[in-house]
Length: 149
Ligand SMILES: [Zn+2]
Image (cartoon, rainbow, N blue to C red; front, side):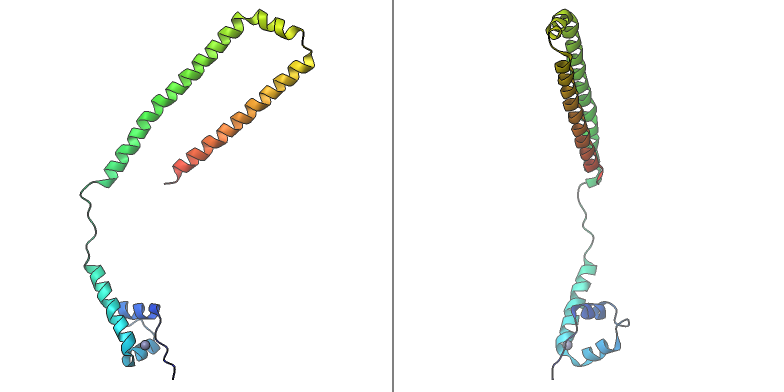
């Protein structure tokens, strides 16, 4: 005769909720010492778990995390201002150079055909546009990664 013992799920169900078990489970447990021992070990384990108190930290975890987040926000704005001021300085410098040497630049392009100038301008514009799109996508991915909390 092949004896099929109860599954782990049935044993746990019996250890937690005896009246909610099926009759076949209860009948098996009336005769099987092996499964009764498994039920007893589960009951012992569940009792030990219920007697455990919730872990208490000696530090306030939420305030530590929140203080770090606030620090990051504080340092975010000055970095941003620094980058914007650098961009502004670069733009002003470029404008001053272009304005000061405008006759030299006009002389430089005078001998070139319009086709060469326009194709160079189109290439430069396309590269700048692609760089802008790539940077925007990178920025979006980073902000999306920050939103996942
Ligand atoms: Zn059994």
